[in-house]
Length: 415
Image (tube, rainbow, N blue to C red):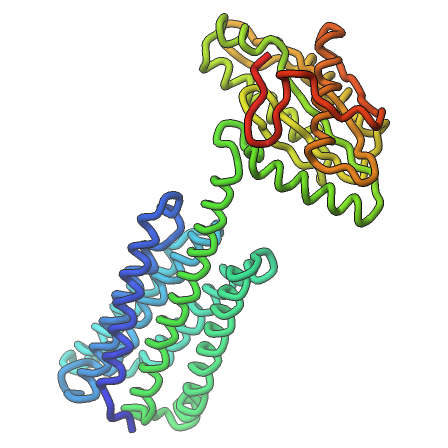
């Protein structure tokens, strides 16, 4: 027999604390539509369920036997809606809310039926129906979050796996505890009232909802952390790597190429006469050109290529496992795509071209020396009239043109 209603109240306090956590996480940038509002409300409903369970334990005559189950059903429905929003799962949520409403009407009718002579469905037992709804909602949460076990990484995957395990375990426990009473109801038409484990089951369900909320909070935290890391490493305008992040990727690519003895080609790209575009069309149009070019760059680059914006109108591409000839063909495709696709603008599209310098890594060569040679090739492309691709395959002369290219700490002068 369940005796310690203090324990279930402690579970309710945990649920209230998780509601606060969900509200705090929702206030973070980018988390407005992640379903956290529903999770916060679900935790509040779980806290109410814990209070009802404690009241039923100490004063069973004050409440209907199904009051706690009804509050838990509302909490689970809200959490299932939140899980759908978090996972971006399409589908109407009206069915979940309608289930709670129908259950509430059923409980109210059961309370009123004894005072109504010959009331229809007066002998309807709500406990097994509410438990079936609990199980269905737990499985719905599992269906929403389950795919994240395969697609998420790190903490997000671990949190998703724990949520799925908790939901399945609690659903199985609810089904098992209802099996014998349902069998007796089918055979003898008698439903034991109250069930001997009602208190323990209510406590388990409240703690389970808190556990589900902790897992979701960890998943939200992991998603938020990855969003912040991406913003710190990617350019807001063009959505390619920033200068520092690009250098880290280039150094890693050089080490890997040296280790595996594979070729590595780097392209240094500069938009021709970009200052004139800003002067003639305005800086907003210049930003549109940069975004347009970054889109072309992503579409024409390979899946393993690393793209970065080094500053202003200067971009760079790291092409792992790519020799000079294949790198030249890739850069020619990029230059052709730029010429064939002017940037949409009003009243007329803005036509522009690019100059590209290409260099393939020599054995033992580091990131600085490789980029200096690519920069020298870019300078040659501009000397030849721009709008073209120039290669720097010769090893030995690694010095940059005077006053043009400094290392990663400072940007080149705009050309």
